[in-house]
Image (tube, rainbow, N blue to C red):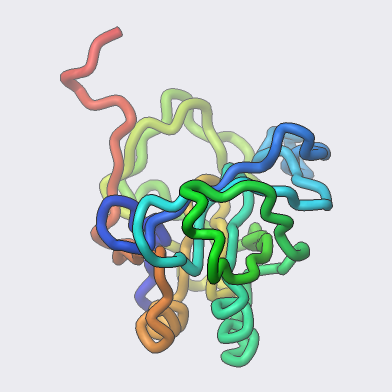
Length: 212
């Protein structure tokens, strides 16, 4: 099984956009690990989902990334449902209160707020070459303290439950997708989504040359 990491295409296409929750947004509690009680995600956003959207390009994107949720175009949502994909829960419609630049108001599509599932799939930190400042001790969430870097992303395939988008245990900040979702993005020409093969995806938040 080939897995992918879903990233923004900002800087690489003409369908670049960002969205922000308005200052009066209501937030609930952040999810916690049921075993060790450690935080495993951002504060939950409660309706109404009032947003401001900033467009960097000339086209309307189909997907944009917030601190904990996704902004999804109606086109993407309808296509996603027609393909019977799994992993995104639609929380409700987005109420767009501000658009920058204003010229993008004309023809603005309807958007929705979506939430990606936190699954039981396990991020194999050893096979991935991942380094934490303090290694994880909880088998449930598999989160250590201060995630520094990883050479690749390896998912233990036997723990994957068939989700097409998901957060893996031990890798809370990265959205993983199935090969089926990659085919969906290509087929429907979803704008704003960049998919990097998991075996090629790496990051280093604390490179060796960096000193405090």
